[in-house]
Length: 479
Image: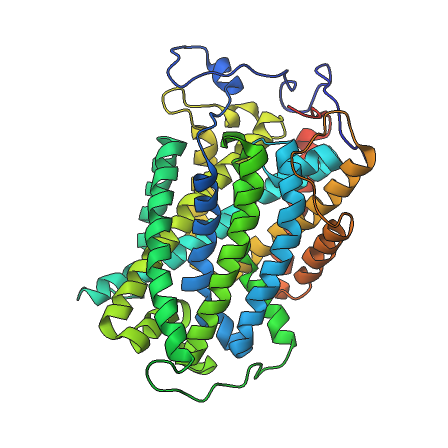
């Protein structure tokens, strides 16, 4: 296997042109009619630490807090808090190696970029295309969750439309978020920052009051349900389901090419977002299972938290959770569409997809073609409305990538290429990346067989694309 490949501009590839040398920056204001120049444009570094944290936290809060509690408690009972804790530990074991790789290679594409430079073109192609499709599944899941909360929001203000409107509303807003991201990364980041700030304020109040009530400091104390009523195995299968909630930290890496001071901001954003959100998840499950039993939460499904809010704070609590859920799923979907397009952009820049997919819109400075290749499949999957399958397939594909990120770090550290000079080094090397790889691959074994089959089919299809189109591409070691 080729570790740390070097540039080879004379190597032909099937189906397209050669990979080119370092491309000059083209600012969005440049006027040109040469379409080939848009292929070589690079993205501007407009995101700071706040933007990185907003992408990570905003993406992760949506599913973990507002969509999963009812589904997770129905599977594992109060021990679902342990499922979220397991997910957080695995995410941290991967976030640390990913942070080191990101500070050495702060380019768009995240895990794809690291793996392709550490493990070669085949692994890079499979992971890059799987990352694209994995983010498509995750974004569709977030949009379906948004549809449920949009219907509940309308119901709370007296407009009852029924669940038949879930998918249509999700499709309309999915298309809108795609258009928003075309108009500029900074616009999308500003929306993300505002949503996350408001969302955290709502959650701090709700979880603070709910926690005091659950502990008996206010209201009436209740007899707690047995912690693991269904045993230990459902805790692990639930961890595999809810791991979709922790995809946000990796999405920060996909926009590394647009972050200022990446050596400082990338590790802080990636690790910080996992810690903050992991604590919020555990607190949320504690509050939810203190309000209702597992069976009741399971019956309430994707919008169980609305009734939890009503239990603690009456109609005001229900409205606050509905509004928070709407904000959270908007945030998750918006950040995921941004990250999906950057995955497509990075793979296309390396000529593993046709180079026209990496063209930059000169007016807005965004990869508009990649955004189209993200938005189209997202809307198609959103139309299925299959929440659990969408979540687990997204988790499957990301867990494969996370395991390979850890393997890539070990491979690159072993070879120590001259260009490898990270600003951050993983503490506890090589134990941390080894544990991250084992945990990531191991969690896949606890998924539903249908999700595993779909995930394997996606990877086989991407390997077929490599054989058909990209097998002769030689990647640059570092850009």
